Image (cartoon, rainbow, N blue to C red):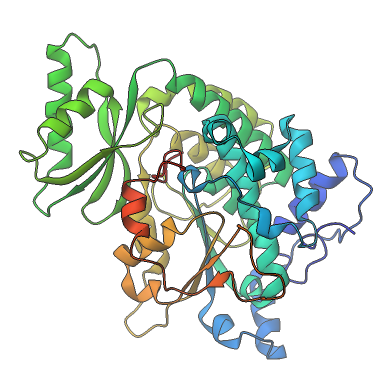
Length: 411
């Protein structure tokens, strides 16, 4: 049978999208065909039935989808025994033209680290993690009220929410990743992770770095904030000479720690403009619908409203800073005394959980991670872990380990 997304009772739309993708791929696998039910219907039925996970249903759940920096060799190994996951990777191989599963499980790391490979890899692994969550805790998906994805993670969030078809979204991710790889190779540029003191003025520091580049003879230099992670943490991206200037003058600008990220380009800045048109063209040919649940945009930290809105902002996102800190405030903003939702990070790594802890400690206390690496057979709860994220995760986020390309959550 087809993956359980197609026949799952939760039917939040990602299932319908996958069903359409399978039909277009010529698969003989069967699955439920009707359009996804509205979330309000699911919530009402959950209340009526008194289904498992009543606490999660009452508070609602939020799914967070990670970005490129979370990937690692071996991811996906813990997902293969769940219905439909191998089929997802088979379809991915047809769309991409190479064996993504083999690359994820065996590497080589240098190939997985390439932007053109790791973005599709994280996209598929994250949706495969949703399949695992659906198998183990379907009530979590039934009570989902919102989703957000970090950069490329937005595509997975939109597929889950029924706005995009799995295969079409994966093809868009492929085009996006290849275009960003090409753009990054055109100019010597990079990304600098910064932790600053409260008085740090990041924009002024970027302005002075650009002036320094102009003195060096660089025309129209780029140096700007590309990622807002959490209070006192930013990623600055641009020409390498500008980033070197900031490192050398870190004390002047009240930066307590700086670290160059092992990525080849200045993602989410105007140096990515060559990647805009290829993605815009493919999205024009992509069927996009209004999400069945709230999905928040990286560009303005607000909910996507309709299909044209999604198409416009997914393109704009390539050259705009990722407003993740602001997005976390939007997702978890609530009246005093209102219970926080249960949050699940679906996909490789726990970086978004570590960031959530810095943005909103109360929300983080309801956080769990759905692991994508190898897990113990038969121990059903070993790899859906609660909020006890190790303290080392956050330094790893800002200062990535060598096995993670752009260990910073970037494209």
